[in-house]
Image (cartoon, rainbow, N blue to C red; front, side, top):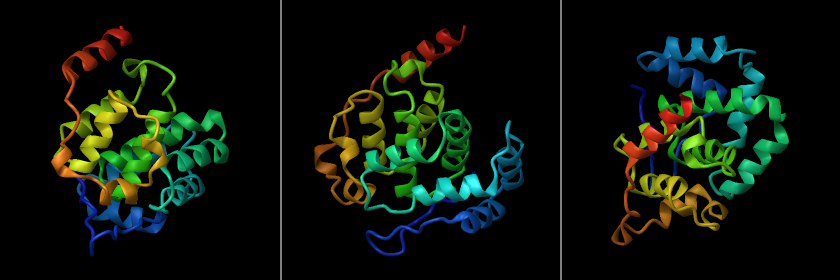
Length: 189
């Protein structure tokens, strides 16, 4: 799979611009496939769309819900699913830094937050992420999104979530992801 973005100094995470994402994808195995998927999607993702999307994810000091609101204001509702699909690919290929993944995953959650978790079309992305070797702060964040969404979680910035994570508090109890997956598959018919 793709490379992980690693911090150079504590609290500093590299920010990916369009050219850096293209370079990151070019440097990873399967990158041609990822880039071709991004460009072969229905109503292909343009470089302008990708640049706009990535620019939303660049300020790790901005509250997560503010970025989600900006996503809704920047892009037409008819574009949300296509852009969310691109976010999935960038998250799965680790073409985004840790703070950018916080934003991306929250946007995927936010698009369907008024519905049951099992009806979110991006649930498989969340479940796949939970099966990866995640940073403890990211694992806790995902568990909260999927099962225990506190109202103030999204008021924090990725920087605050990363620096404020206390490993002694542990992560919330892990739910039965097999049941979540089954509910999702049952919904698909």
